[in-house]
Amino acid sequence: MGRRVMAALAAMLVGMIGVAAVLIYASGADARAVEDQRPQTVFIAQELVPTGTSAADAVAKGLMGPTQVAAKGVPVGALTKVDGATGKLVALTDITQGEYVVASRFGTTPTGAKAIQVPDGQVAVSVALTDPGRVGTFMTPGSRIVIYDTYIPLVPAKGTPPGTKETQVLLDDVLVIAMGTTSLTPVAKVEGQAPAEASGSLVTVALPPATAAKLVHGIQTGTLYAGLSGTNTKADLGQIVSDATLFK
Image (spheres, rainbow, N blue to C red):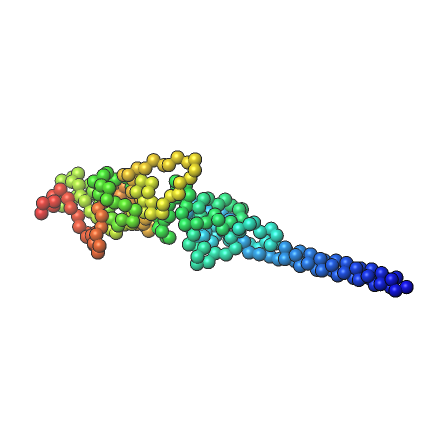
């Protein structure tokens, strides 16, 4: 009799343990299901995000923006926030429209020969200069330069023969951001990609849009020459030197 009671109690105990295990598993499964469905913020490219674009600029310009997706649908390594630290990072390659933005797509050095960083609110313009016109090999990315323009005025000064050339400072305190293919932001080498041919005479500068238009016009109509600026150098923007005044 005692053995039958003990066997019955043991069977009941095993059954209770089984029921408890099922309940615990079911509870955990419910929790996992809820966690999988919990909305999480990720970023998606609304438009093409070009190489070299900072994360902060991409958000500000509407190139990418946050969206809510279920946690189980979040790609591994997805970018979930753009703050002071991540906002300064730049796109290492182009990010196409519709892509979930992965954090690893941003870094400090863009990849590819076309990568160049242009200061916010400015325009990059390239100009071909002779060796003397770019101060030989001494001009480098980061240099500050003065750009001179030699041209033939449409209306010559009084007493000056037609066709007399004049030289004047076109732009003062201009930032050089690239020389040939060498830029302020080094371009990372891409495996299997041949390096672009450098053109040492090609100087790329960064300018506000209105000032950039002046440089483009000068490129089309005159002959440009550049000089390196020293500390606290201030060029006379109003000075005009011509054939008639050169030795006065």
